[in-house]
Image 1: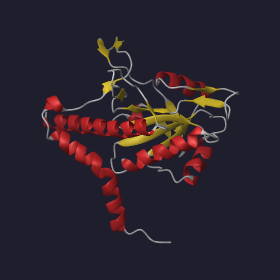
Image 2: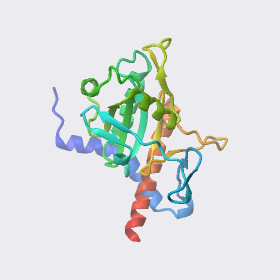
Image 3: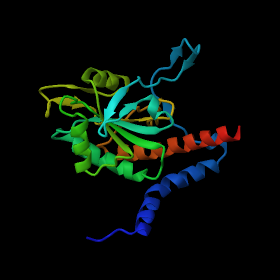
Image 4: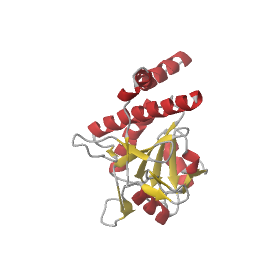
Length: 237
């Protein structure tokens, strides 16, 4: 079997990451008025403690990863991440979903503040050990991609709070129904997305549709650029 040299690895990562870096450099070179951003998903909520109306934030969660580590929404602050639902014994849509999400992971492999979060809808069978086997067998990144499990009701309630679907359905293939869509969560716990041609916020991206998968990749680049700009501005203040 042919051995991949260090130079080849570096070259491969450069090819994958370069489009995102070029985009970031481009937007830094533009005036603020031309800077593209993504919209916020969900109705604004009044925060009594802060006495201010704030953008909708995802619900708090505590889930267990395939590496037996606790994953929380607070722990993912300062991170841009894509959230989706699946289950290890899914006979139909999940393999295709994760195949495409794996392409997204590869595309942003070199950006340290980006991750994927895939939540099982079948926690009774998908414990941490089972998810670890699932992840290892498919050679999915353990650094960038978190496969997580938890209490069933918490997971289903969380799906609602993310504006996605996840629930048991004995009539469905595999016994569960869940969205084929994924969402982007920003570094503050806000769901972000583009608008469609009619000016409506799309909210989520169907990762089984090539066009929407491309939109997802493009919008991650936009969000990375926004995040890097904000960090840059904070350092200048």
